[in-house]
Length: 286
Ligand SMILES: Nc1nc2c(c(=O)[nH]1)N[C@@H](CN(C=O)c1ccc(C(=O)N[C@@H](CCC(=O)O)C(=O)O)cc1)CN2
Image (cartoon, rainbow, N blue to C red; front, side, top):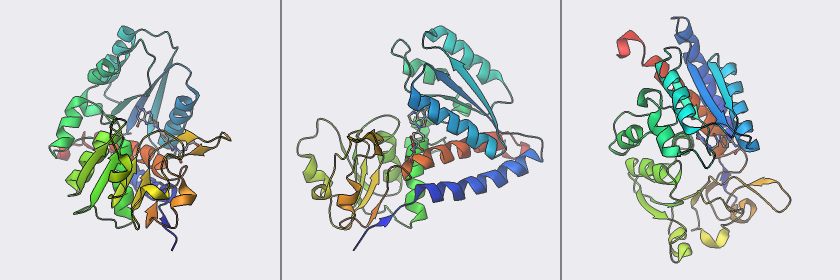
């Protein structure tokens, strides 16, 4: 039997519709959710993502300020920009597009963002709150994965979730969110010995490796839920994930495509975080 294809595009559209309605109700109370996106340098993929973030904000009636700087921007200058945004009452969310040029220390930049405006959920305060299950802005891609599982009624409780990848923005938080949903979580990474022995035990397999068609049907357990966070180019220059999608279709129970799976959820969750931040400013939520 062929796996059910998890449609991230349709799910993100549905979420964005609901977000748009909440934005309207906030706007009628005089608050326009505002997101500031800081982009440094000329990474083409970053430009595309930032453009999509701005377009999505505007389509939902949110304010979006794009602050663009050359590759040569100094770290101190960037920290000053963030300081200004921290103090701006009309900006509810601040996002610095990653990756940053090598001469800028990513951690110092994330640390400079006021946790109340950290809509990426990357600040150590947000990460700490997420891990102990307190209210926090959840990182957008891992949160998007959880929303997709919910949309398809896939309950992680009691399941063995194997996460391949230990980045701070995807792998680590994805595992933590699955743990909070009562999954038993195993992390695998570039130094894992015998990767396939772990992946074959996964009821839910999350791949955030960044290598085109890295996983095939031999890596998965029959009936597994396969979530592909990879964003790679194949030999013909086409966008593809870490998973050989066609190969796993007749073995998995659910699988996310690339494009159209986890990716679109990232921007939807960013919109939700920005809206939540603006809603927190309402008198009754203070
Ligand atoms: N500050 C941040 N930087 C980065 C993040 C992030 O969450 N915060 N994540 C990624 C890039 N990213 C958003 O910034 C992102 C990546 C991919 C997609 C997406 O919708 N992908 C589409 C395909 C798009 C295409 O055709 O190229 C899909 O999978 O269908 C959205 C956002 C790194 N940086």
